Length: 189
Image 1: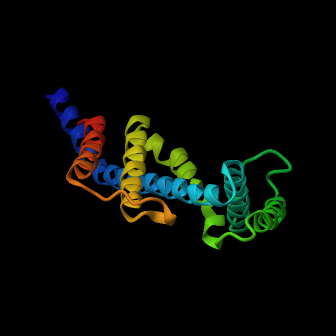
Image 2: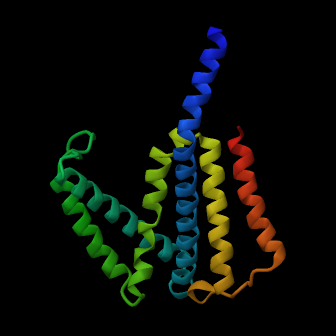
């Protein structure tokens, strides 16, 4: 009787976690879609400046965005648990301002939204650190990859950022559906 009761409690506990897991999987798919948006934006910068320059602009935005995010978090009382001097909020503020200035100079002449391409990896990194441990690495990566490919198919369809359009067709739609089935299969029972 105890074994059956324990099994029922385990199943009941798992059922309570399922809606949250589905929300985290959906968030992971969305984060994956932001990755495809970043890649499309990098392609637009590449066509204007080159691949190294596109990567540099993206990295400047990533690091400045993280520095400013850490400053805001620290200002709200969530001090970074990093060694000195990185536990100091004002260091992040100074770094953020300096890097935003470098970003503005490096991205001069580009549409402002392309300069923000480096902000898109921040949700990816935050989700990897916080969501992946909760749903498992396999499910997280499957969700991210599905999101990346779904986003890429959508961006291809509209020819985002002046890229060549690749319209949706039944085969591509089936591929998207199979990606989602793959996430469900990797999630398992």
